Image 1 (cartoon, rainbow, N blue to C red):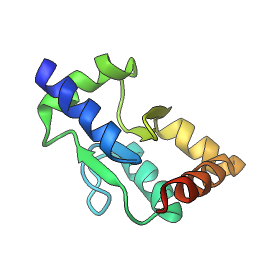
Image 2: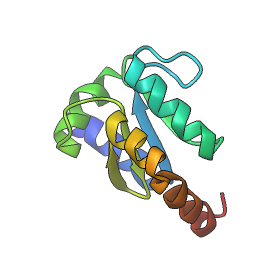
Image 3: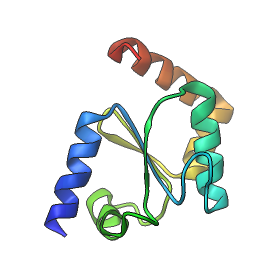
Image 4: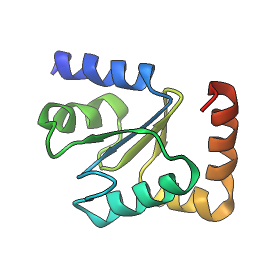
Length: 109
């Protein structure tokens, strides 16, 4: 598990936006992951996604690391934003667009 935790820390540290999901943005394997990836893709074209159905070590370790039990999980600038409900709620309120626009400016994305 320590190796998986190190891998997660490295992914979050080296990538501005990380979406841990079931499947891929082009081929999501659950409705929640599909919605999260779809919303995120409206604001930014390039982000790291990790398919937790393929990377079982991350699937097992991430809920402990993040203290968040479900997938998807969106991380922006090293901070856990939340899962599908939070992503969709922030999208509806315009908060996700604002956040991602600020992140794009800070990180030249």
